[in-house]
Length: 390
Image 1 (tube, rainbow, N blue to C red):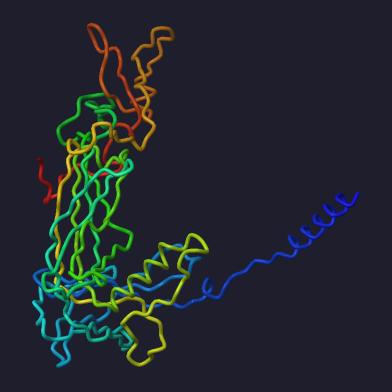
Image 2 (image 1 turned 45 degrees about the horizontal axis):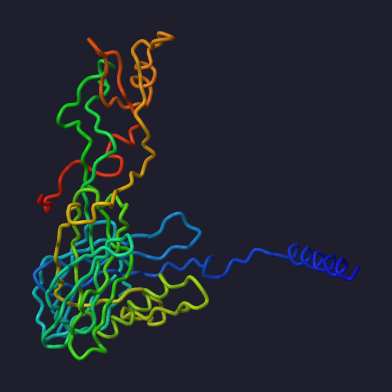
């Protein structure tokens, strides 16, 4: 009887607590502040500098970023000598190689259409050693990619990397036929209509850092870059990765480390707790205004490698993103009903003809869905300029 009373009391208390719940909208969610976000690295070497400007948005808004246009964006030294970046639209500003003097310090100076000014701290030019190698090895049914680099003068110590990857793939079935949009009949595909092989790509989304601060020598040996599952379509035929390396100051490294902890390590109570990001960009007239970003200056190093499927374990087989079962059959005149399935399922329907069948004439086609025959749904046929075959 005591147990029943206890259970009843718990149910009553639970009902009261549940009934007293109220929606909680923290101030950060409803705040109308749109803080300036500055992304990019000032390239001191032989390549272009690209800076992206945007503003933060509320969590309740439908867009993830709000691009900023009509800003004046200048890279300048302490003597006032400047390089003006060109606006390209959608918050992007760029300039060609500036070949900055490594003995000087520079900053990024921004001005909005209303005259409000922002500037980063003056930062030294960090010398960035070349990437020694990009390698890979199978590990736990994944392909582990890594980077190795070193600085013989031991004065870099802090590194960041990002990458762009591209891969060639094909669909489950190769369709040699198509429905003519004019005649409404099935015909063979022309060369420019072939959609069996395609290229796709992606960019890194995680923050990749490395430090040799605690080592005697300034060496990064097999620093992890990314992993690719053995069933990924990226590894089906041929894959390439373009890796870029940035040298950081200690303060810049700490900024990116805090950013990484805030965005990638918040899964449990044992992970690092959120902390405020202290960048090196400020509102000149209102230092209290939050500005998100950290401007570094370095000569960006890059390296590309290609990986062929033949270099991987033979039992690694890519899985197609669509459920592609056996091919279906469509007759011009079905054996039992005499119904024109080609007309209904292919010409008027969504079926894609793969190959014809018949003894003395074409009696119909084996067909399937577009996802199993058309690679342009998730890629493009045109080969990138940098692509090289084995």
